[in-house]
Image (cartoon, rainbow over all chains, first blue to last red; front, side):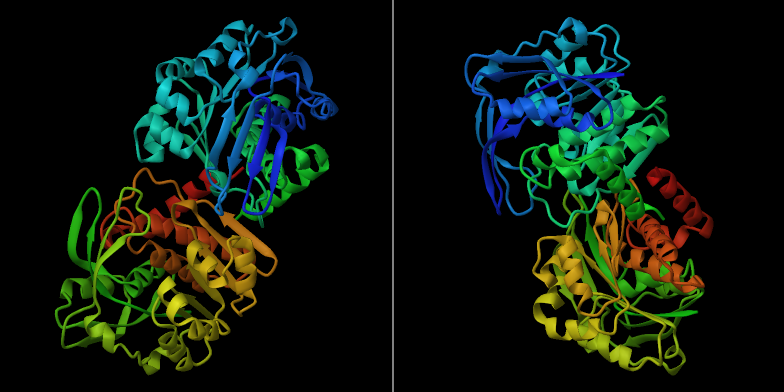
Length: 300
Length: 300
């Protein structure tokens, strides 16, 4: 199976109460692809960077065997995001967003990628997410992410897109906002009616939920002694989920649940250091070990 | 096995965004004892009420076979609490607290209760909690709850009490405050050093955690479509935990984990209506059914 991810590749500047870093590798497509590459060797990335994008970051992605034919290097500056976290490490304050070359992002999917069976539309304009889908042959599974900005400003495009989505990933406040519902269960039920076959609600340190048909799966997060930097945790989670599913023969309920646990496991590595520093260092055995610990943590 | 609970018996006035009720049965000892009675038939309650305490509430407790020899009926008014919940149903605003006869509460444990093997010291002044313990013969298990007020105003007494406690139950913000730690894991490790053999951290809709030695158990909450009134959920949870443990032959890790899930299950019934209305109506089979659903919700 092969996976296509379309999203941002960024240079992040992050400040936490304990440390800070400047212009480090970030972006939804980056975190997703590195995470997915632990499960499925064929990961195709479509994104855009500027001519200032450091070659060491290209090498980091190549070391994970991610196919970069779809990564356009355009004259100009790479997309930059600057954020700051408070003590509770929940939503960061965005200090600055410089779109730079990302403002010209109109993804053309390379011919070799159009047969990718698994597609992840990372958090970008739902209109662009739809354009990507239109270029694909016949994906087996389409997953997408979004954010409050698109819910508020591109609701119609998002709702249209959802009809073609198999797995819709979003966080708790986003699904409540999209559904106009304070009850999470009612919100999920309402959004399932819009088309997505499954919904995964990301609750950060409180775990995640999978809604599909009448079945619900709820899992806590892996217990971390401390968090270093939560940036990219959501996309790393998605990479684990879709990567694991792509590597599975069947997409049954058991595999879906395990996929979510693998997603949670991958996210724990993302938050243990700035950028993809930790993710770039771990091995498959580390993932397997933490999955086992996760089971020990939660079984009763 | 027999269980002793010492705590408040109250008349609550509660307002939620959807409904309100006045002077209904409440109190930590009440919720705890009714919940525990689903697992262990010998539940002894020590508390105090005023001469205005409605006999229908006495009958409700008697219907659950709770032993009320330790419930003192004193001339005067019953302890009253008035609270209001916002849309997120987290911490309520306390509108009024009338201690009334509770201000004279100096629990004398009836001779017949002094051999109770399981003791739950509900959230009262840690000095009084200690006085209760001093009257007990040799309990097999001592569990206690507390609140931010005692952490801030009676820290010394609380810390002294903890040396004699087997299971310390408290919520996330309380354990962080007591330990002066933002990391939950570090906070739990620090508090375990103060004496309690096990710590259960209640996270409400986000589930709960059990810390014991080097082992940790984490579970999400049962998924509720909506919450009617969360008052008493924590004490109902504790009643399920201690009730189940008292009914078990061994207090091993498996039983401890199941006890926590049973506690969570009991709490779901508490929040489905005002006061103990729902808890008074359910049967053992309802508890068993929801435990099974809980397993289905969380297994992977």
